[in-house]
Image (cartoon, rainbow, N blue to C red; front, side, top):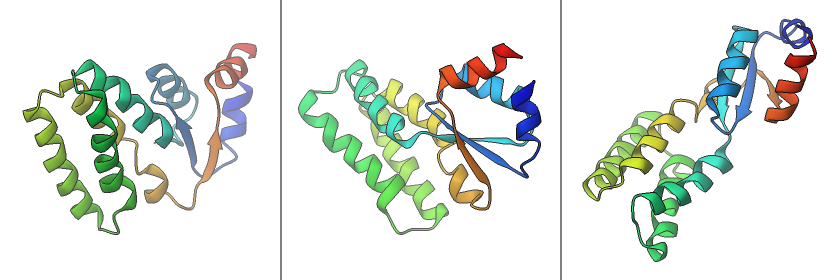
Length: 138
């Protein structure tokens, strides 16, 4: 595969994607050097849907998204402090019946801080059709 050969030239590769499991599985099958970074815009945008699915009133959704955003993005805290604050927020969401939102965030968190942890990597941002197109042509 041409893309696999190209990826081997790099020490590490971070692939930013929307969390689509197909993209993640294909990227990891192409090279063991690929690390996944959650596409941050999609993490928060998809929360609109999961909060709706959980039955949260439209008026409250922005406040909830803003609170999670503040914990995950804006707080000048250590990873340990951020993790603790996020755990507390997720517990509160669960108490309020937000199972879909908590599931979404737990999935996203696995790949949320990859770039922060791998700052010296080369970053590749590929859209699904580009990645699949490159793989299919081989």
